[in-house]
Length: 453
Ligand SMILES: [Zn+2]
Image (cartoon, rainbow, N blue to C red; front, side, top):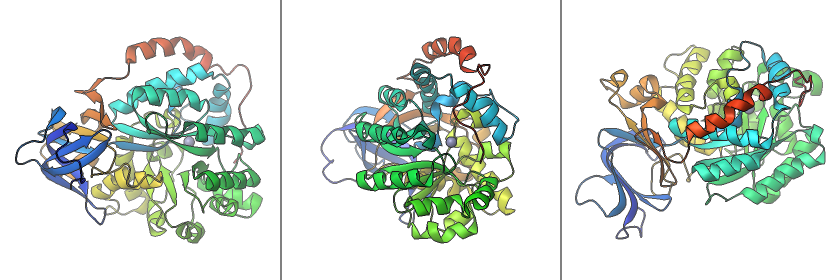
């Protein structure tokens, strides 16, 4: 596989001798032994057998003995919430929001968000997350960290209908101003908070703006079966039907969670023809209830399911490798079928399906010519990984993000030999620690919203 025209021009990066995770024409995952990857600028220009004379390159990484795989994509997170990691545990959804998270979020300043996002960036680069879809407040602060850290992101400024018309205006303003920035690594989205905090009229206005400006819409919907029941009781239809009525299934829409998606939603989702994706964060679901994203139902509807962590206040980590493992385990249990969602399928969710859920097929999620050079090199020498009978099984069931040695985004090396090259973790922690008492103070008795879904 070689991109025409790149031959003869020295590469910026050459990775040699790797076992490369590739996708066949049917989208299935396989591994190509002893291959090399050429990168010109931010783009992969060739993935080919590592035989014959090596092409010229400014930087050569000998990746013998490692697996090269596409960077992980976190399809739904609130990255600054790492500041609340472990601060609200062992309570049901409603108490989690009303007694902990929303009262604590009253305390946030834009600087708090920026400092916390730096910690998230360090964690993500270490965990091999090269793209994250963020849905939060003070998005300009997050965009600055994306730019400076070298990560790639899909950023949406969260709004509620309680913000009035200014909410959508701010979300749209951010999306138009920041898209394509950070040398093209920032893509933007409109980010209504949820079907239960944003009115049908505001959802319709969001769909209209998305169509006019060709923007992704990133929204929490159908987060639990209880939410779906409440929506039917109150409005007479499901959250997915609310999205359809608003016109949001006619544009590129990313649904966070979708746990409460039911069989009656399938015709509308099928009709969306792959424009709608769902982000699944299975680890946190285990803490909050028995249900998780119905992957089998969504596959039948042609809906891509990408991997996510949600915020670290619920998931505790921003580790998408962990989400990949949980996705396989949780769905086997939910389907009562040990054959369901085998390792190669989990790897497909981690790569091409995650890219599709963000509307970024052809840009990220594959190591193939023309794709962005978002590449991980994974060491296989941990005792936990040996011996290897089937590499997909090893990666999904034994592997951990700690096995990642090198993280590359858009052709730039952000971590090498597990050393962060763009983030000063110690300085970030020094800046964050003195803020924690103020950030977690709930004595003011205020809240940014009331959860009643
Ligand atoms: Zn969320």
